[in-house]
Image (cartoon, rainbow, N blue to C red; front, side):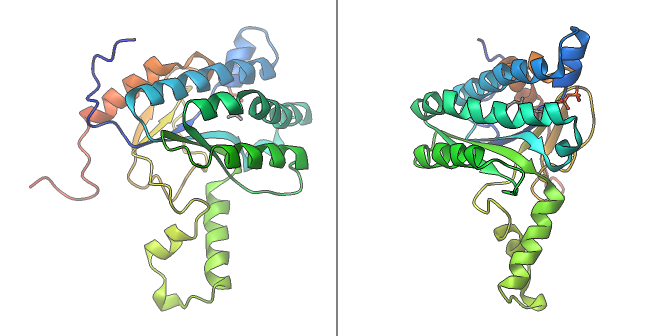
Length: 239
Ligand code: FPP
């Protein structure tokens, strides 16, 4: 795979992806929506390989949102079970590649104990890896994360006058995670959908017209090239 437009010295450290369009991809082929999620998994692993190839250090993907519980029960059940089986099947491969797996989201009663255990096992096994941190947002919602941070701040007895942006940031689910430099959403939709609301404040947004199962590292490289063409000023002006 050639990397025509990418400056390897300026690759975004953290890329966040909303993997959207699995259902439509399947419906267009007359397949059940779950077939779209299965195809989406290959796209995810190709994106991981691409991220490793160009030196992205953090990749965060939206695998199941707090809103996804309202999908048909059979699809919800499939997604939960699918995630569990993927972890068992792909964990060692990720470990061999130097990928640290992490999970971010609510650990509520709707998640089977077996799934939580698979997540914990994968996270523990890969905890020392540093080549790439793949954070899977599962049962995740940005507002829920900020709400939980507020609860933690209050519970810690921190006084209103002492609360800064850093205080909020350090009470999020993953305080050590740098903010995403690049946010990618597939499927031609232009929404954040409650993903990493606090963290994407200054991310460059790239919206692609491809459905997630058709996504590959080539699209990741195109998004990175687009990111590199933009000027990042973080609210300032060029001097
Ligand atoms: C959005 O497409 C995608 C999802 C809700 C699930 C994403 C999950 C995967 C790609 C599987 C990877 C699994 C893990 C554990 C990382 P959609 O169903 O909303 O598509 P639509 O908008 O076309 O209906």
